[in-house]
Amino acid sequence: MMPEDKQTKTLRWGGSFQHKTQLSKELSFDWDANYVSDNAYFADLDGSLGMGNRSRYLISDANIAYTLPWMTLTAKAENYQNIDPNQDDKLVPYRRLPQVKLDMFKDFDELPIKLALDSEYVIFQRHFSDGRAEGQRLNLKPSVSFPFISEAGFITPKIALQHTQYWLGGDGPAQYSTNASKTLPIVSVDSGLFFERDFESLTHTIEPRLFYLYVPYTDQSDIPNFDTALYDFNSSQLFRDNIFNGVDKTQNTNQITAALTTRLVENGRNRLKLTVGQIFYFEDRKVNLLGNAVHSELLSNLVTELSSEITDEIKFNSAMQWSYEENAIRRGSADLSYHGIKNNTILNIGYRYRLQQVTQAAQEQITASAIIPIYDGWSIIGLYRYSFLNDKTLEYFYGIEKDSCCWRFRVIARQFMLSTSADVKPQSSVYLQIELKGLTSLGDKLENFLLENIPGYRKPNY
Image (cartoon, rainbow, N blue to C red):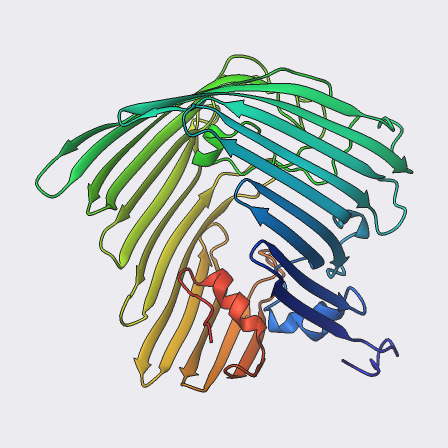
């Protein structure tokens, strides 16, 4: 709290409250409330530390969940506050007041049938009148699948029906109908085979997989986008029934995915795992988040993922996507890590590459991070991030911590770039954390900062 800001002549403050409780075996409740007096609060009073500048929104929510073996019922209220003074308030996500979800699933022991229902009801509200639609959304997605599974493979036909109904109000664009809806069948067949061969200490597997998906086209231009975006394209996206991560948009497609995974397994660990997959399209895709573009590509990016549990402590992961349109690698990554089981040492080095895209800047950078115990509870902490494209250091920090039975002490110095523009100078900060275990701490935000930046770091449990 700042009783009086000398520049604005106002009271500036921030507050946070968290509460979790397990009311019964089936019923739980949690509440996370956060608020600051103005959207420049973190930029002026905390942004120089650099620890809280990764999010543009301050989220407050309350959740209650009731869970049974065959059903989950949740109710949620969620609010967003803009904490980026350079961002337009129109970009702040919708409030959900409330969001109610009911998910049901039923297996039959003696029959290859699975029934499921995904359902949701939400009231979306804007923080103020800004010309965007408001209203209610009901989504129902019942499905039935027929899994036939054996040791040699599986085949799972599935039929789902997606129905989304809207009741819109506010002062949204005239293109949106006040009672818009869409109803679409989703038909898929997932199948795979499993071959294995045993060697002296290793098992070699070959696992081909085919996934067919059909969703017809329906015009969705009269439906607003409340909370939907594109999934990041990776190996998981090869087998999803929608490229969008929300229900406001449902893709149309007629496609088949072909993928192959091979492994070398030793004592249950993947000493080597390689996955290659691609989608083959049989018709144009017409549904977009914005605009009326028609996607007529016959092939998706070729996805390749290679990983290895070299030892119990040393692991390697890499991924690459090849674009036939651009005849180039669209994106790639490689990570090598050492996470010591007994000595608690953490060493990471990673490489990221991304080709220039319409909505994404090109990227080629390397990151190294470490936590190294040195003596009697003392450890050194550090990270270094460098951009080959910009030929400059994007970020580095280093520090030291002391962990004892009753208290923890950390101090970290950091330098980072807010932008890669040539005229932008690096920002510097020093961060201090003192914690009495089980009681309180000064600077608890540092835990989340390390969690985001150093793979393998875990918050301590007291």
